[in-house]
Amino acid sequence: MKKLCLVFAIFAALLTACNLPVVSKAAQPDLAQTITAQALTIQKGNAQAGQTSAAPAAIQPTATLTLTQQAATGSNNTVSATPTLTLTPTLTLTPAPSQTGTLGVVMVSVTTDTNCRSGPGPVYPPTGVLLVGQSAVVTAKNTPSNYWIIKNAQNPGSTCWLWGQYAVISGDPSKLPEAAIPPTPTPTITPTMTPTVTPTRYPPAAPVNLDQSNTCIKNANPAVDNYYTINGFIVWGSTANNVRGFNIYVHYDSDPTQDNLLSSVGPEVTGVAYSIHVPKTIPHFELKVEAFNRVGTSARVALDVPLPSCPP
Image (cartoon, rainbow, N blue to C red; front, side, top):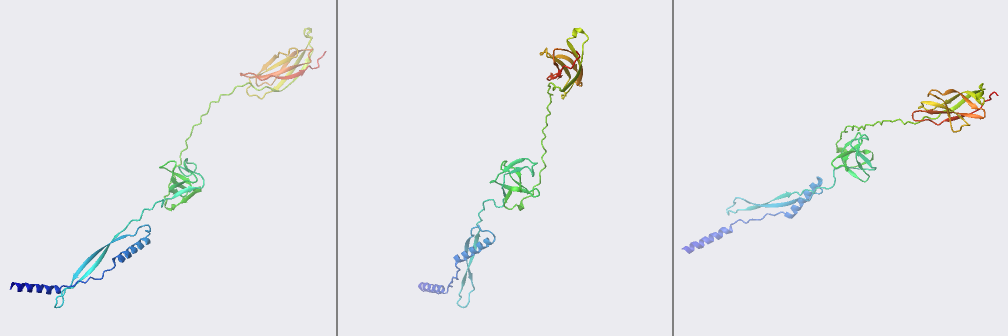
């Protein structure tokens, strides 16, 4: 009896196994082709957005299999299961590499060596210079004065004003800020020392344009009968402005080493009368005039006077 029950149970199990649903796998899409197409689509979108230097995005697909069980139909109680494959791609964007260089920086060079000043114009002192072949970064501009504000290579950390007459700009300066003109520097006044002038003292210039007139008188005194008495008047001129007076002398050929002083007059006098005794044996005599001041005397200027016709 037990053996019969065991055989029956095995037979029932076999019948049940024959009625199990057969799961058919739905057609699965080609995953490789799908991923490649999606990557190309993303790369094309990035190119249109200007991301030419970015690497294509990496897509990691995730497959999910879902079995949908339908209710039993018919008398044979057949259960059908429809698998659904869902691909969920994971998009990983690789950032574009950073660009090198001076993109967006405005540079300037010059065609002639140009001073760089503390402001626009020669009233501002130079603080640097930009030479031909050098370049500098432009930080601002002042359009009305035609000046560019650049980084000062001679004084790092500071800026200076470069005249645009010889400037060559590289880049787009339209977005540079307009700089305000700094106040005009106050010139440094160095006091001028006025030296104390000590006048130079020197002797006066010699008299000029000597002239004279005279008359001869016979002596009534027999003691001086060997002499003529000459009465005359001598005049002169002067160009000196430092004269204190004039000395008038007479010189005889009989005493060539000595001048005899006839008179001394003040600086305003330019003529004087004289009276002298001249030996009858000499043919002429000399009248001499010199100027003097506290420093010294001028040269003596001589006037040769021949003896006049005197009565016998």
